[in-house]
Every structure is written in structure tokens, then in C-alpha cells.
Image (cartoon, rainbow, N blue to C red; front, side, top):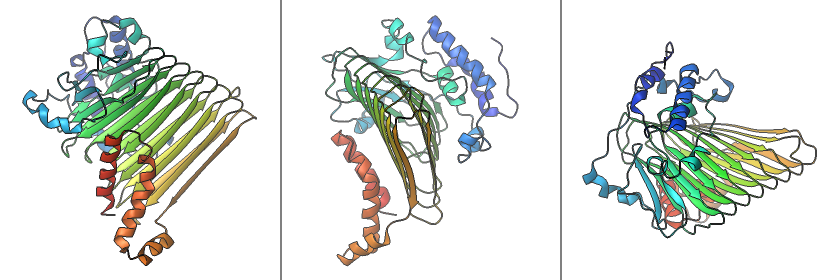
Length: 436
């Protein structure tokens, strides 16, 4: 294959030169073709700039100056120190360290009637099933970062829920970053067949305040009447770069509930597209971003109502402290045949300093006439009357501000149904807001 070179794009060129090293498995024709097609798009596409409408608030030029290789394997004799990131409620756990699957730290409950594991271990036994889904939702033809992930993915976390199977305990997909100046390409594939139910935790966490790059992609397929609760937690190093793309396809009467938490990364971008492709499909997504210093966190969502009687609910909250910059762009489309759609969207931002900045842009595009849709956005500071009320009860001003700040975001965290994860996030918010 002849590789093109892109002028003035050292970041992409450096990745292309190392492409041959990114081999998930050997002699799987469809997978080789998928990666090859993605690489052609990598060669063709340009790095987004703030001159583009969808990136105008997010300057990722610092990323173009980096040329980080794949991480080396984490030392086996240090595995024990990572057990603190496990969740007590989860008996199904897939662990990836710096992009590499670690079987010794993963745990699969054999009593559950589900198919789960990493791509390399499942592709030979479930080749036809995986080939039917992997790469089918996350389109890379016009998205550089999805193309990068597809071309260079080192492995993939795969969860297949068979027909009418309900998994009582959450499935933990844990991605741990330990090394500096490396790049990883986490990938998740979740397939929920008809009538199945499960909770999925997609968890990104760092052991050190290192500089590294994460390009992640997740694809969720929900068949008729399937139900998935999805908690996505991004607690990367505050020096890291995290670019994520997540796509969900809902079939008839299926239900997706998602909560996205963003605390880490110097620059982060989360793109989420939800396709309500079946009649009566429902989705509810909530987001909470807490940033400080010079962090930039950008959330772009697109909810696509394609069939009638769909229902969507979205709430996004952002707290920006110091000189942080939060961005929210939430688009909802109701297509001509999606009659009786019920959709509501709200974005709320809280600025803790005069230097913090939040840009919010809710959007509605409606091409049907029998719908109920609403949206709104607010950005402000802490309510002085509420602070005064707490101070009148003997609470100091600093504590009053901390309590109100915590309550603003705690409303989202309170909806997480996994106690140990909820506690971990509450402690993180309390630690960060006490200095607000």
C-alpha cells in the first residue's frame, strides 16, 4: 500500500510511519481491510482547527506538536497496586493498561450467560458475530480521530449480551494510564440483543499526572426491547489529551441511559451520537464536567430521532473554575417520519471565577409537525441569596460556596446506581470543590 504524506502535520505522519506495529491479530481479512480503509482516511483527513465550525471553541493545536509512541507493557510485579481501581460490585471486569489488555487483572464470571473479553481472544471463536458490528457505527470517513482509532487500535473490549439475558451486576471496562508520553487507542463494542439488560461502566483513570494521548471509540448496538445503563467516567491526568467518539443505535422499544462524567485531561473532547432507529426507542443522557486551571472540556452530542414515538432527555452540567473553559454543543434532530417525538434538553453552567468560560449551544432541528420538543441553556455564578441564607445559619462563606458547588454537580452523580463508583466520584468532587 502506498502511503500519502500530509504537509505540516507531523503528528499524523509519525503515526502512519508506525502503522505496521499496530496489529490486533493476524490473518483476519475483514479486520485487516477495516484498518487499511481507516488508514487511507487518516492520510486524507486534516487535523481539525478552530476555523471549523464544530471545533471553533476547541483549539487542539497543542496535540499536533506531540509524537507519542505506543506504551510498553506494564510490569507484572506491579499489578497488585492497581487493584484499588476495581469496583466491589463488579464481578465482570476487563482491564486495559496503557492500551494493552491484561488478563491477569481481568475477571469474567463464567456463570453469566454473556460473551465478553478482548478482541484478540474472541475474534477466532466469534469472528462472524464481531465482524457484523465492529466498525459499523463509528464512521471514520469524515472523522480523523475515529479513523486513527480504527487504524491503530491495539485491542477492543467486547461485550455481547445474548437474547433475553439480564446481568444483575455491572460490567466494568477499566482503562488505566500509567506511562508518560504515550498514545493509546481504547475501543469498546457492546451488543445488546433482544430483551437483554446490563449496566456498563467505561472507566478511564490515571495513576500519575503524566502527559499522554487517548483516542477512544465506543459502539453500542441495542436490539428490540434491550436496555443498557452506561456510565462513562473520564478521570485522566490533568496534563493528558483525551479525544472520544461514542455512537449508540437504538432499535424498537429499546432504552439507553447514559451518564458521562468529565474531570480530567488538559484538553478533552467527547462526541456522542445517538440514533433512535426504532419506533418507541428511548434515551436519557446526563453529563457533568468539573474543570479548573487551564483545562478545556468540550462535549458535543447529537440525538437523531429517526422513527416515531421516540423519547429523549438530556441534562448537561459544567462547573468551570480558575481559567478553565467548558463547551457544550447539543443537537437534536427530528426527522420527517419521527412523529410523536418527545424530546427535552437542558444545559446549565456554573462559573466560579471571572476568568472561567463556558460556551453552550443547544440546537433543535425539527422536520415533523406532531412533536413535543424543548431546549434551554443557562450560565451563571453561585446564587448570592443562597450563600447569604447559609451564612445566616452559621456557615462560613467558603463552606457555603463549597456546599452549593457540590450540590450543583452532585445531582448528576446521585443518579449513578453503583455505590462504590458513586462514592469515588463524590469524594473526587468534594476534594475539588473545597478549594473553589
